Image (cartoon, rainbow, N blue to C red; front, side):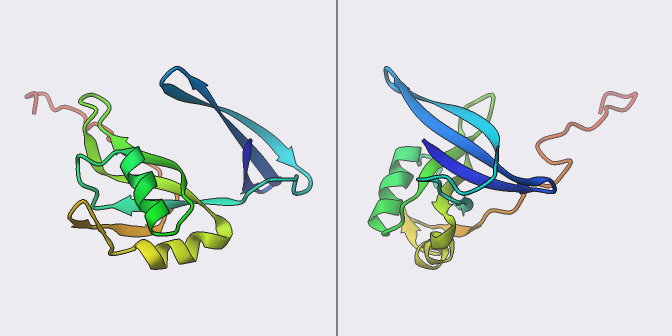
Length: 141
């Protein structure tokens, strides 16, 4: 079971993630709990932003590519449109806190399926983003 430590104003929180294989699917169960001390086997994970992805790229392709670059990335996700399920051209991966700078240095600008990837430490999502719709005017436009 992997753990991730998240900071809050009231102390640290641990997110424990366990993968369970059901046929061809890998399902993750997550548990959030307060961490008093670092438990055995716990990892501090940070997220990498992966930009300029080819639309045909899959999580498996990216995982293999990171391994070839010498980066141990877990939880690789390609962001997809919720209706068409087509790739949106970016994704995220989790890397140990101690490896984040090395991962960015080794991978940013490298070729993947004919495109130079943009790799950065992911920033927190801004409030108000995520495809909010505008209100329609009386004319319907």
